Amino acid sequence: MMEIIGNTVMSEFSDFNDVSELVVVVIRLLSAAVLGGLLGLERELRGKAAGIRTHMLVCMGAALFIFIPQQAGISDSEMSRVIQGVIAGIGFLCAGTIITGKDEQAATGLTTAAGIWFTAAIGIAVGLGREQTAVLCAVLAWVVLYVMPFFTRFIRNKIPW
Image 1 (tube, rainbow, N blue to C red):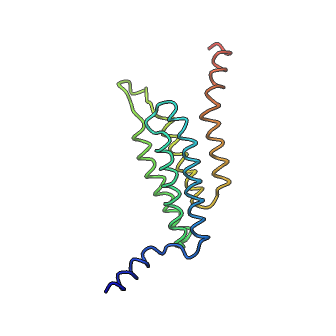
Image 2: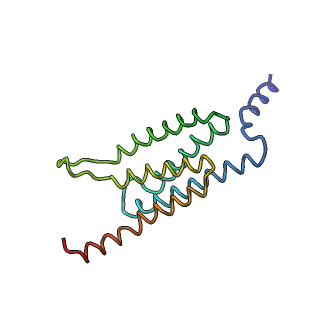
């Protein structure tokens, strides 16, 4: 009886066929965590609710939702549906970060929502094994979040409206 239980437990925890599969999972999840954290840092420094941890979890979650079906060998059309599901789920999370005040024209949280949405896209790229694309996108998003505010302030000060 104990042998059957032991074998069952062992088979349940045998996701990796070899060490290289383990390394791939570690690289992808760590990449997603670092890239998501990079984007979440700006939101954290600005005192927003969705900061480093949220962005890291979104990026890692998106990567995992893509990576696991890919490892299971699903078809491209099935992967398309998985990606659509991740995007739809992130849309609900992003909607929760947008707050409309008494004035319906004044909404806050749009940049945070866009950052979460983009972080999920980076996680999808990582999950698909497109780490170079993910890094490039994270750098571009970092430029938008960190550099553009300085540029827009400079333009506002130089151009009288």
